[in-house]
Length: 287
Image 1 (spheres, rainbow, N blue to C red):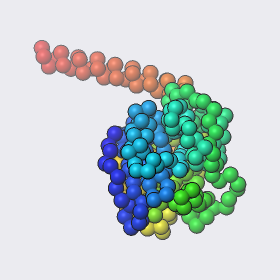
Image 2: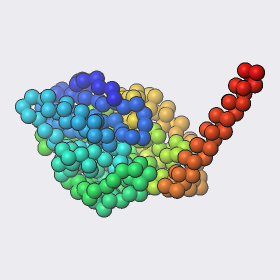
Image 3: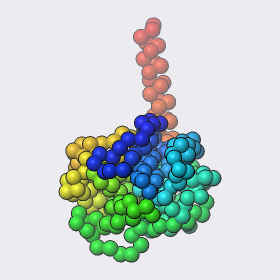
Image 4: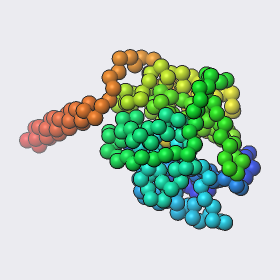
């Protein structure tokens, strides 16, 4: 996991930022700590105990016994939030966590489908988050997306955009000229499109809306749930490409554990055949 230390938000006064960037995998998401003079927030605690311990270690080194004032979830897939459910210390901050109301419901009711807990092999525990977002019906805002402003206890204000498609509870968060986009750039990929909660129509609306956010809000950089940060211009190009790919995806079956198992078995058989073929080729070359 890449740890770059605390860095300043450009042009944002007292805001500091501690990104924890992981190599892309399905085990855990990136995590981001953001601190102001009076607030300290965590975006996506991830799923690995060692990652949660690192987060808590970074916080413990801050002056004046700082504590988290908010945890923002981009969505409730287990690779992004299992530590909030299972870690003995981080789970104690569940009352300070923000999530789309449908994600709050999924964790409260131990929904193994929407949270992808079954596919990811994670155990759920009934968890009540303290701050449901978009709990009342809202008309689409300026960019075709529902918006809500979060005001943290210390006064830090964050704009939340509801961006369903990858999952019904997906949210992107804007802090000044920085946008945290969760799994938006992976949502149309093979093996991701079709998971429980996926919606092609919602995803297309969200992708088009995010393009408007990035352009009109003068976003400088996007931080993804997995992988490295993406300059705004590259993010727009990626979103455009993904939207064109998603437009061509119709009639996708839902990815169930059974389908995932069949895919894994097929991959194992294919790898065995490739290995056998390479062995035969090697023998012919040798002799």
